[in-house]
Length: 77
Image (tube, rainbow, N blue to C red; front, side, top):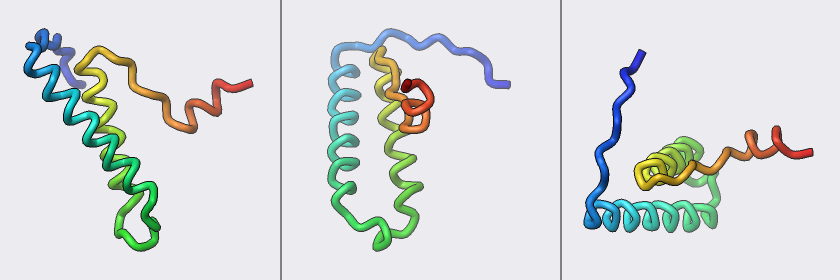
């Protein structure tokens, strides 16, 4: 079982770098949406990795990660 760690506060410079990285990851995700996934090996794994990175950076900035499509469906009426 992983030990719970408390994150240290981010400096302004760190927040800016994380935000910049998060925006770049979002740009890559949007760009890959326009590519035929059958033409890129392991596209689903790439998309999962990018979403995980995006979620982790959001948590570091204090945002709640966005729910997955399956989680969204389970909460809809």
